[in-house]
Image 1 (spheres, rainbow, N blue to C red):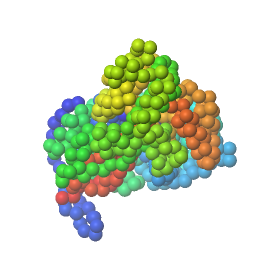
Image 2 (image 1 turned 135 degrees about the vertical axis):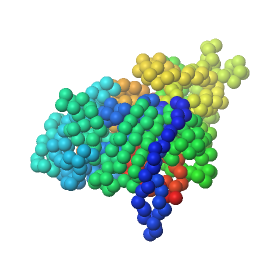
Image 3 (image 1 turned 60 degrees about the vertical axis):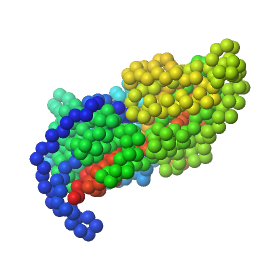
Image 4 (image 1 turned 120 degrees about the vertical axis):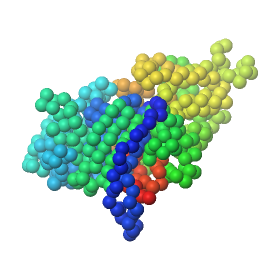
Length: 535
């Protein structure tokens, strides 16, 4: 459920190319072109430096899932849409969900998708995802808690929950992929990805995946004859490979654009490429360690919020590809569950200095750094190198806080050490990369960072915990929305964090590549089944 989001330039020898059939566009026939595509992704797209293909153990599913598999339903900013289930019904008590399955759907091995396969997949996903959530903490608070899956007939299943779960459809879309039982050995070990998606896995290694089209895909046969996805963790090497013609496309996935935003800006003016981008629901924030000085004082946390010029960070670090945060979920109502009344903290360094003065901090020795009782205001900002922009953002924060008299030391850690420092509380304040928050379901993220029992919690507030727990067990949309609004207001009152930026996500693609459509977060490559080359 998490996702949450990080080499060297390696050569690619392109095999013999197949000539695709003519593709209609705008009433005319497109020119014949080799229908092959080479896609480069960065480390954040898979949260590792290796590809693996087990759908429940592979972070690379951030970019591969929608190409190999389908869920029962798809949930995005446009709402809920049928996928392998064409419709569904909910019982009056919200504990029984009946799904009517799409007929005539085939798996990659030619076998038929039916209720038996759906039951197998849901049970497998339930076992796997519960284990993952138990490791991260909080499964009982937001997991669907499936009690049983019953086969009603060949194309109908009934899923029974231990308790009502308003986010059940969102969970199905995100984490319950449908795959053939033949994907597993008789001993229950994962053997091969066999889904219903538009592409079939041909081969893979630690840094390269090759996909072939699934001609019998229920969504329609892909136009591409081959797709190669290369993992190139270094963002500069990734941009160089695109410019050198070794790649046709660089995509984000899991957050950001995989390459430096300065490179995105430069490539946008290159006539060979087109940039697709959109502001994401993922967000970056600073987390305060409120258990120790100086951030145990809410006024200091407020002061840091007012001292930060978020728009300047968007322009300087993200080259304009992003939008400042306002609150805990989204920047406007296009992000589901966002409270539109929250305006966030404006840039107001004067107010920041006033708040700091109230707490006894002043520049008594006139050196530009605040002090109190002979001790300078010096704190350490901890951050990871997970996304390519983290270091530049940390430096910008360091500069902005110095303007109000706060000296910031920077501490960059590898991801494992960074996570350990958060869990152990060994930090003053930390730059938190986007993780755990999808486009439509903020529950894992809210639980992880703001529930008092969350594994990376930033606060302990009983009213928030009660609102969260109640929201997880109601299927009434209006009631659920009001509970989300309440949670957001509590977070804004507590100031456990400073919300910063919603970074833009997207892709940079050669102009002869047509048919790409923007998606977000963990489905950035969803439209590859409709992509083709022209000219």
